[in-house]
Amino acid sequence: MFITRIVLALYHFRQWLIAQIAFGFLNLLKLLPADRAMTLADRLMRKIGPMTGRHRLVMYNLGRAFPEKSEADIHEIAMGSWGSLGRMVAEYVFLDRLFDFDPESEKPGRIEVSGIPIFLDLRDNPRPFIVFTAHSGCFELLPVAGAAFGLSVTVLFRPPNNPYIGEKVFQFRAARMGKLVPSHAGSSFALAKTLEEGGGVGVLVDQKFTKGVKTDFFGLPVQTNPLLAKLARQFNCEVYPARSIRLPGNRYRLEIEPALTLPRRADGSLDVNATAQMLNDKVETWVREYPEQWLWYHDRWNIKKQIPRT
Image (cartoon, rainbow, N blue to C red; front, side, top):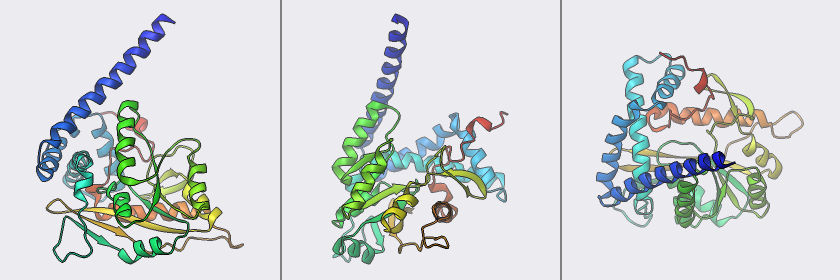
């Protein structure tokens, strides 16, 4: 019992220490102008990322997803992906300052938005709907944009494993993105309640899910969370793709696309497996267009333990 307490205490101290180091780095970034901070974080992660154990997973994922690309191309995408992760950290610090979109202004800002009529329609004609996106670009800007348009969306998110970082992240997001639902066993009920009340739900659909339906992603077998498809089937609601794209000069384009026509079975019911595959196909088209903006260090195919050691 005594030894167990010591081990737990050391574990919690390690988590606390990691959190303090992370907060210290974020506080340093706050001292810089946003553009300089994002550029610095990009450069740092391009140097640090390849030295981490995750780099092997990045290269393996890229090699399997793009067998037609040369080793030089794979390396370039990997470096861009690490830089994208660095930018994401810096963007998080300045998130509330980055969104400067003003539909009344003729002067271009840092943000451009595609699909404004869809935003306005969802706001002015309240009904249950689901918006999905992926871990690509500055995806955190999407709920911020929704809030800016007066569109209330309940966002499902996965808290960081570190509880100290998780609490800070939750507080930060809640102040800027509206209602948040941490991903856990009861989260589906919270999302269903939102839809039942005629509200909107936001979901990331490219996360690893070990008990999902069997689908393909980049032509490789992967399991996909059926939650979105099941909610869409239960409430017969519209499903909209949305994404964030990083542009040159530390600018961004946010896009919301028209609602998908979801696949149905012969009896008219929504086909959950085919819908899950449709979501993967949509995300794949996004990633193929801007591969360096997706987080390749994520173990989406659940194959980290299978990677051959060199």
